[in-house]
Image (cartoon, rainbow, N blue to C red):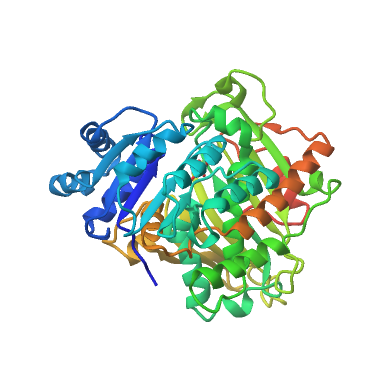
Length: 486
Ligand code: BG6
């Protein structure tokens, strides 16, 4: 049951995320008449603005970040009319009174979107509470980073919980807002033929790759405290793993779906410190070329030497009946050769090949779910090459192809935040991350970090534009498995 609010309050309203994602997403919802009628949006941040100058700021952001075909002058004008602004020093309790006065009556419901430095969580939550902006009609959306390990994440969750009970707390993992990520649910649970083979009997291994070509991107302050493990694995990659590995939820709702994901996180095999060096690989990019762009090393971008990892590969296991013995290989990194997010599911080989010696080698089937940049699902199958060969038949691996762009031509690609902001405004928690999920994710990744510390593991250097340190190849090759690349 959806329960839309009549007001939205955006913290960090002049920040990078607001300009690139939040304002364009809210505009997209507005232009498609998906926002509640009369919904007002108050922006807040440290910078001084009045309503008029903030509307200009928002207009500039839309000019810069909206695709041309989405710009509609009339819709932009009516969207800007929803916006207001109140400057705020987040550490000054007094300021929250002014903020509350600006927001006005919240009896019709208020949704708050909070993306702030972890150090500000406490003052912000206290401030909201003191000014009456945390009552039963108010819900809060939280953007990462929500801590840097289990202990700090618990502390943040405890702080938030003093003012907002779990059912009014919406933790954002923007991967869950991606259309293709939700499509994993549709594929698995909207079709009957995957389920019988979706287990250790049918599947040999699962590979999840999030490859990026970008480097540090002016985020040194944050990235140095995070590294690839915290930045990508504790959230996005483990969410993808859970959607692949979870049992079928009984209903498509926040309780059933998140119960099943949480069970997966709790079933992840905890690594002992001794195991960690064998089950993980870390790297840091050196200078190199990504495509035809010559790029600097991480240390040069940063301006000093660092032991922060920009690449990580992990062999994970889900210890339950369904997945016994099936490795889940995860890999993510910056400055890799291509931007690509993909899940590759390698099936077991046929039990006996009648073509041996009379046609060639059979490749096991692979299901590829490409999340970005293109969106498609491919099933690699063996087929006969056309021809009149006398000594058997020639076999070749070819894709059965479902291109989302072609199948749904004319539908626009939405920003992940459109989905998530709409769900926050309407109060649907299904695609948000519950506290028990987050804490189980941290518990698992903390054990990896502890293993690196215990064994003094330092990231290995890899040239920008490569697929990471060669040890990442060895991680799968040892098991006779090859990373699914083009
Ligand atoms: C963010 C990370 O959560 O996800 C970034 O902090 C990363 O480092 C980004 O670049 C990747 O998101 P997407 O949607 O571009 O795959």
